[in-house]
Amino acid sequence: MPKLPRRRSHSRNVQISLRRLHLLDKAVDHSNESSTESDDEEMKMNEDSFDMSKNYNDQVTLNDISDIFELCKNNSSYKFISVLLYMSLRHFKITWRDCDLFMKEIGALSSQTCQKWTDIFISGDFNQFCTDNRGGKHIDDFYEGFPDLELEAKLFAVERCRNKSADFTAWDLANFVDQKYYEITKITKDKNANFVRSIQSCRLDLRRWGFRFDSNTKRPYFEGHERPEIVTHRETLIKYFLEKKDHFYTISNDENPLWILPSKDSPSVLIFHDESTFRSGEVSPKRWLFNNNAPFFSKGRGRSVMISDYLVMHPSGPFLTLSDKEYQQALVLYPELADDVDDVTYVEKTATASIKVGYDSYFDNLTILAQFERLFKLLQFKSEFKHHNIEVIVDNATTHTAKPYSLSDFGKSIGTRCTTDTIEYVDSQGQLQTIDCFFKSGPNNGLSKGLLEISKELNVKLPPKVKLEQLREILANHPAFKVISRLEQLANKYNVKIHFLPKFHCELNPIEGVWCYQKQFIRKNTDQTYKQMLKLIPQSREIFTTRQVHLKLFRRFWRTLHAYSDGQTYEQVLKSFYGSFCSATVQSHRRITNTNL
Figure 1 (tube, rainbow, N blue to C red):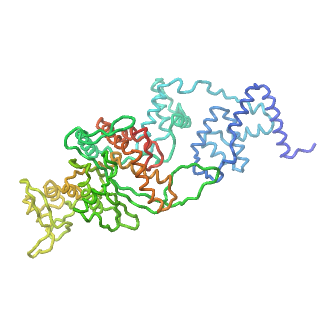
Figure 2: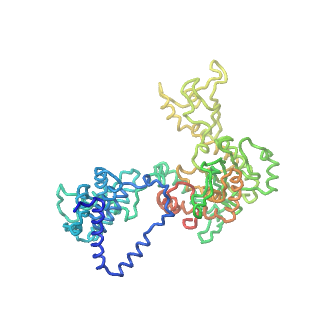
Figure 3: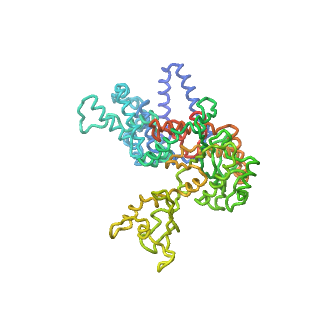
């Protein structure tokens, strides 16, 4: 009889195997058959909904495949899964060597072993293929015998994941479990023995405990919030406001927050300031869609407008606006309030300012000073603020903290650099003193004096041959160089107190929530045109006021102060009041919800 072609021979062998499998299936309970069929139906994929355009090479890693293989191995035959995977790879023309490298990488049998069992299966020796001569480990799950070890291992992983460095791996967990296991059992480990819990199993443990191997950028940022000088600044600010809390307008802790009026004399109005940029191209990250009927959208971020605004902690309203009568009174004393300002657009009867980014100038220190002076002038005519102290909170940006001069602006000798014409300071007698920084006459007329000459006029004794760095250290404690910022100097003229937030602590500025709410509203309603965005900005302010979101923001401000006062760290405060910020994977302004307010 002639030898059968290879294809027909293979087909016959497969049919023999199928018949044998059919005989085995007859022994299976019919109830299990129906259950299996229903499970299979649930596991079928709707091919119409599958996106063939996705590039899974960028999403699936060998670790992911290895973890899936480990799961399959724990719930099925190690040999069957390995052989199936090997036969599939060979069917798609993957070379034997590449298969071997891949199989070893994910923890499967080698290509040589898989090829042996493949030959046995194809030859028709089904019983030999199904025989597994390995005894296997017929024992309970590893951690069932050591529940305390599982808890310690999980805590170890949590602590390592909290570190700023990204050096934690499944190997570290396997090594930790191995050491703890031998400590608990008091068994001496053979130096050639493997880990008692494999690295692959530890990777599965991490997934089972809720860990994920994800992008290192998708997490809350940390830039030194607990540095000693930052903590000192934060504690000083918090102590000030909590001690004077009865002088401010605060919010009740009821489900529906209400205003609590100041209980002390000399009440204060607290105002928060900040800037933010709105971009016409930004859209909501998610939306309802039907099938593939998604509208086209612009890919770019569009044109931008930068807004500088104030949030007022007072029952009269969250945004400062004068009435027509009050504004007319202000124009009598300050007619310049009605003048058009180059590059900056002001909303009438307010101090709200905007700049077209890319077309106008930026909000630099001079622009900010001009805006604050407009605010201070308007505040004088707000009837609800009569007989109130005004205090303003700003962030620590250089546009706010810039000083008229500092020691680094001066050179040592005559004719060196100098950025200011005069130095003004109050001496020990309480008298205002002024020193010229440039010679007005003599051979050096018009030249800068330098720190050496200025020191002589200040009557500061210097060691011989003093160097510039030593000179700056000596003068740093002199009242002439303990200068406050330009913004504070301007505020003092109008009897307003300025508070600078600690660096990195925008959670202490409730106006950040205003930007969050406005941008969320605009992204939902925008058609990505600049004109439409400019219309939506004032609409978002009106809805923000109508829904009284500011009450919740103010209440969270006081709760945050109390949390820091109780000893909580920056990380703990964020998790208490800004939970979505800590767990979200996109760093942007967040939605305002009732949960953490």
